[in-house]
Image (cartoon, rainbow, N blue to C red):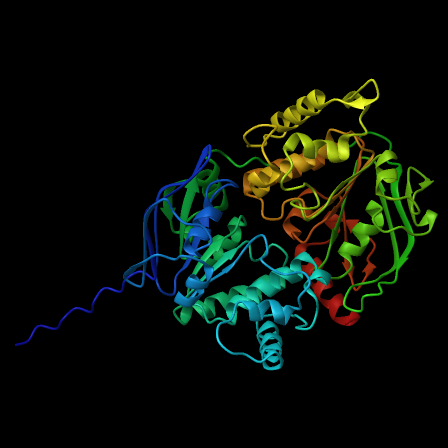
Length: 511
């Protein structure tokens, strides 16, 4: 009688063994081992600076490990560059996008494809795939005219067109509505059912608990644990990530005078670019002591509204007022002189100059402070002292005031930029995407910071696509869609589902 043979064990799609990567002054990955099976959705969790992004770049060939081994479908490989990774069947969507601003969507996607192709046919494929997965794109649009959320869609669609065996996603839902997240999850589950492995990096713990089969936790460059996230709570996952209880934001009542500090009256902006949004009769008032949130899908006028409020785009004088004084005709520097602070969504490049030190970046907007001057000249010593205070007060993890901005993780750079603006004691603070791509610990810190500064009497306006964030910190929430802003309503009078439907439904009507 013959004995049936047991089926051969299926090797992991990808296995990492004892991977180490060192940089001057820091070990980004320290003896990391990790395995991802075919068809598995595997989360990698950790705070900003835990080593997740470096590890993903090693897998994608953008960074070379100093030590360790990579095994792909049972065979040890050396992935020399991203082209070699794509040839193996590895696709990656970076948190910081890898796109050329002066090229169209379809041209950017074509750059990642091998062999012969026809742009016209490829454009049809881009449109079809983007619509299938609920990530609408116009293939002929120039990338420089796209919002941050639309650029992320380009990255995701570019990977899907390559039919990857392993898809690495870094914060893929940070700019999506709840309905779009559901669609993306359906897509990822379908890909997994077809054998595609997915490495999923996200700071949204509820998403990981819902979507992922396994989770590897990293802290300080090391793997500190592995778990089934479906068997964990968001609190227990947070404890594994940050080594302590997750802080809870508190919003004490404001006892001061609730006077309007920032007012927008009948703001209109006709955009000459037919692919970009215009603004139509925008009206808004933000009082001292409150946080007002604006939700919306990327590309519905957020960038245009931010430009009009910050002073990058001027308008008629009485379209924007600060403490009753018309400032719509003033440029950005003059508005800052009137007490406006601004945190842009693009933290590296607009919020901070990558090659400059933190001390130099502190001066970019804080040079107006009299305490930074001696005999009419800016004091470098005082600038370093103020930057050091900002680093200490806002728990910015870096190598000191002389560290280059580009050397910081996303969350730490955001804490520095927000801290720099808070320390100038503004009357109005406008913040775009305050915790985009930021870990749960830093997110809680930043949100509490915004609540605290609001309750000190500052008028705070937050433009965010993170609905959970808006409902956690905002007193009132409005929706920007098709360039039109709805009347902000008290948070307790609505919910995320209603806001999400309004975001999606209004955009369809505008289209």
